[in-house]
Length: 68
Image (cartoon, rainbow, N blue to C red; front, side, top):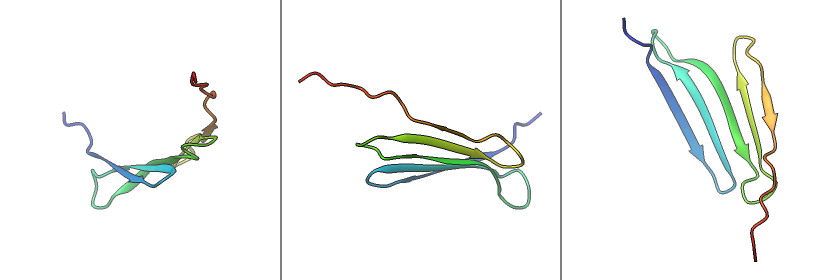
């Protein structure tokens, strides 16, 4: 049995990282999920959305205080 082929696409910007996961097992690409980490270097947030009634999630990571 062969596992389905998946394609991960990344788009890195100056303060964000966007991503999408596709199923490439059929005649065309089908989007499985997509999301982003926005506000890198500031108050970053992580969000992900699934397709086909999959749940969505958004989170803000805890702030990391660096020693001076």
